[in-house]
Length: 149
Image (cartoon, rainbow, N blue to C red; front, top):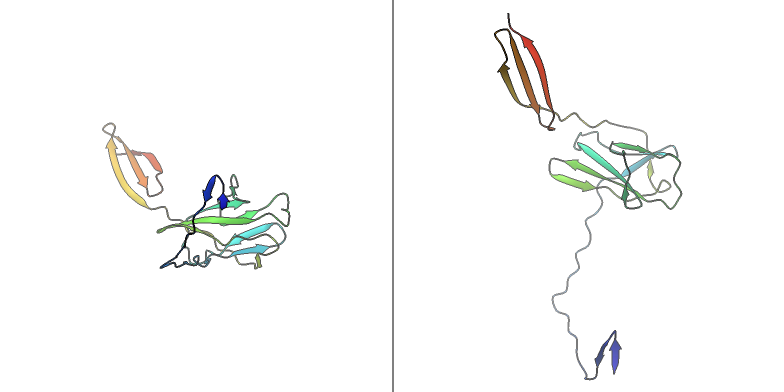
């Protein structure tokens, strides 16, 4: 008899696996680059990514929400980093790397400003004063007083 956990098998049995296919994982398409011994970044020269969140050893790094990450203090050789980037299609996870394994490079391109005006409305307050309220694609709202003569 064969025992697995608390289940005992006393009869002979046959195991047959049919139509078993393994799908390999998607190849990593976003590479992390290194500059100096404390600076990691991702390529954004096409302006495809709008937001970033860096991770160290699987945990989000507070405040590390830019195209680059500067480690302070310098991380250990075993610390693993990756970044989740956001574009119009959703989230993309970068390759995982350590500072030692990251590809050396030096060109940085800032994220594009994707804030656009969505709506604008003028509210009359009095005969000579109106309030202009603008709403933007990033959810922000700005108001300004306008004098009418």
